[in-house]
Image (cartoon, rainbow, N blue to C red; front, side, top):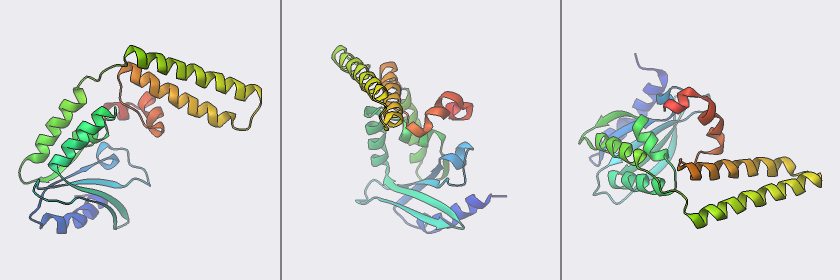
Length: 198
């Protein structure tokens, strides 16, 4: 028997399914990966034919569930993969790798899943020597500023401390050729086995 959130999603998608330009839909996010909170929305990718000249993003509430939807042609999803790779992000790739196909009239979502896997495994370029020196100087400068802040007993020390820690973490990710990790996911990335499996 479908869960309540699945019924809400089915209700939301009813009109979309009837449209000729809609060729598939996929749900992703915490409801699929198994870690929704009371504030979690239902993330849905609606795939449009490549001949359309429009895209849409929005939010709707059905049966108390917030549904965030993204209607794009497949060529736009492929652009997201490419952009995310160059921005050291895996967000779009992970969404497609972990998402659940709801319907796929042409098989394009299966193709996008395979492409997402290829982008996710693609090796990133490391920092070149010049960039490495700039990053090292930036970290030293952050520490220097943080020490000044502490010694002066300024009220913004904690703000500077956490900001500097985040910059240190993101710089280390770049050094290791890892994706950028959003600050609100760092703890999960380091400690949560469910998150790491995803």
